[in-house]
Image (cartoon, rainbow over all chains, first blue to last red; front, side, top):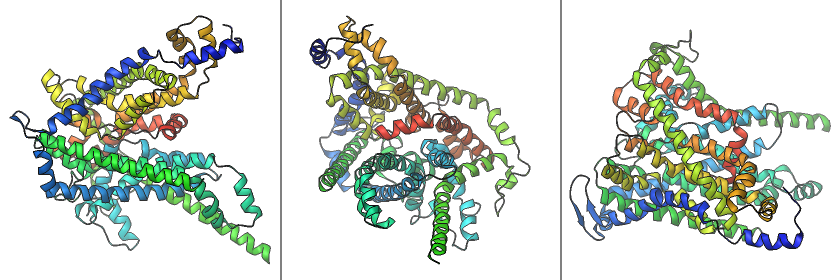
Length: 303
Length: 279
């Protein structure tokens, strides 16, 4: 194969290469996406304006499902709970992940091993891990209460009390996903230019000043990306909550996703559940856009 | 005097740093070690208070209990078939698509993939559940494999777009001038160069399919459960004791953990590029 074409020809051909004609490359995937992703979206719209009970009747009801959602206190609480859970499950992993990235950016003995252990939770099967946490949370026999009381901290009810269930689930979520934040920020640290740091050192800045005025502004875009990804994932959290509490005790940990699951697959209210899907989706998109705007403003401010 | 103080400061800083590493790594290590400990102890030690930390003597009885169940093998096969099929199908259609999107600069398609990444997995399930009922496919592995494409396909396409965009087009242009058509260029020039990207896509897609719970939780019948669904059912409906449960949980997550240890570099590269996650 000749690899040295004449420059003039190369330019013209290069333009043609980008012109399109890639239809057949994309078509098979487009069919699959249409079937398993776009069809459900469209059909959900259709179902959401029907009273649709599985194995029962189906009747056009217009926006009645949405009106019912507005008046449904249980749904209202699940939205507030989801926002509270999301706030905690974004802030905790982002703060810890930022700290971890700064630590892992330094060279120290056994760093490779420590980092490997640190990122394992991210890939571990959530259901399997949730089972282990469930055993650790046991109020009488659980190892966590033993560890707490042995250092003089009073035992906790963990997921068995309405006041502590959300923070406890956030802890599990933080355990799972702090590594992802760490990896994103670590990637950012690796890409930082070295000039500002040398300038700061020459100016006699102490480590805190270097972090506050040099590292932090340069890292902010990466932290923002991590925060956006975490927000989307935290809103969608299902496995951990469902396996550990199924939304309990009572409805104390019933987030939108759990509410949605129960409506669809426990009560078989498919029309009503479709309305929940739409509201949920809008919420996710709106929050993502707000965060994207925030990221853009950050980018402009640090320019 | 000052140098002595500086040395003490340096010492303190080192100790503080070591402590920070310890605090960061120990939660991860402790959960996995406790899982291992539970799985290697007999029932008396597992329910003892204060807890017994080191299995003494360690027993494999819990694993024997798990493997002795005749359905454990079925569920393992279900998981293997589902994850491999969903990954293979996603690669078959997703790698060319990633190439096409990258070369045709089809940003709208990339945005579609991004939106699908934002949609909760449950919202795909309601329509697809109805569809599979209508088609009479419930009770087979087919619906589970198809729904897993919701996770695996966006991962593959996303990773491959990034990878193909990073490849120089010079070689492809040269091949075109030599008379190769687009398909030949893709097969003979681009695909071999994309092998590292395909590896990353395969590993991530397999792991997130293997870990997925929700699709099979809704769609699986008694014989078509995947491993995560199977162990969840054991926990809720059978009130099985802790030892075998921990052993089963360890068996379910072990393949993924081993894969992470082997392919850490690829996984880190893929995740930091796309921030992909299934579900």
